Length: 535
Image 1 (cartoon, helix red, strand yellow):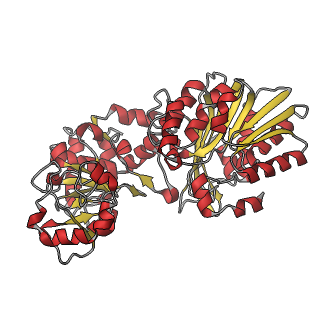
Image 2 (cartoon, one colour):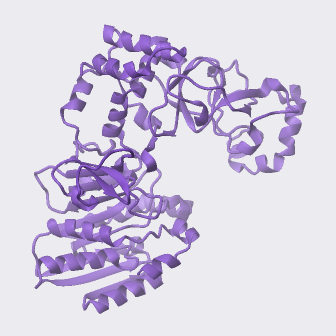
Image 3 (cartoon, helix red, strand yellow):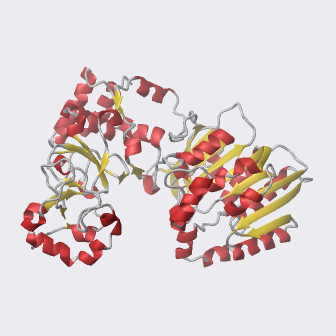
């Protein structure tokens, strides 16, 4: 088994999503399946992406341990013939009845009888359907009623409710992205409407895989359940002392929160229940009880209510348009460019780079300047014509070949704005009056939309506070490796704002104004924001 995994090349892994399941993780998932499976004389187990068989064999072993007299029948599919042969060999060595198929399970699923399996367990390949080609992606989306940026997890799961018998159990190991992304609503919808999740584990940045995938486990039944779904999460917590001698897997099944050591690093494990999941469009999260209700009761508006959140520019040819220094082009077309490196909490640093930006800065709408007036810049662009003209999507959209693909709103750059990076460990929201252009690794909110600078300061204060961080983790929860978070529109627009007319909110505004101007004490903001929400 180990040898097989070592032979998979990096390019093949990336293309086909081949990250075989570690033994400990397979056993943890199998134990959860058996914990929720009703006793049966014959247990038929399907793995539609079986790889070398680790998951399906762990499930068989768990069934036999609990019901020694049960007959286990295995059915495995995979597109990797070598892996299937290895899985078959391992099953034969264990004396297990099994059937193995080399091929595309999604294509074969429609021909399988309904309610034909007691257990479905799988770690589907994490491959975006777009990698399979536009026609294949459209076909999968159409056949399985999917929308957005989907990966193969989505069409796999959509077949499971039909194939499971009443009382059957699904054990799914997949990327945790489905918990929080818009596209993950496809998976959340199937789980909420056609199955009953009973155990959910967000395994975060625990590095249980060698791949850069943050995994999650879902155990769901084909039987309606009245109780709540157990939810446990595990994320690294650098600098935190362990509070328990449990292993990570023991802590995930414990009754309360703890900090354990895993892989030589401290990991915080939180245990609770899945919050209300009736709306599949919203992220799934650990229930936070009364705290979130208190924040909600004191919320006047959300960030999305008061302003539009925009991503920065996307040139799709950064090596041409973005440089640290410019010579030989008219300076009127060169604008300072804010990147994630320039943005700190409260205020920005001096931009380290700049962008050739051929748009009329007096127009809010995208309007090109007359390049006949800027012959040096045009000559420079023509020297890179081969690369720029290679962006066929630009000209296909009726644009000039030398344009920036997403220039955003030229006339708004000169208006003060809130800026924050796409990815950072903690919030880094800053108020910018420099007039700089914002790069695509950041987001921005224009004062032209907010309408009141005091409200902009309040937004910055809430976002940068401990309350804002907790709100993100409770409600949005899209954590990456090393404690980094994604600060994208669909999350930030949900951030709460207290009533700006209160004296407590005005104290937040005053404190943030001082910090933006390079004065003040940032440590006071957390307490002021808590008070503004009545906590």
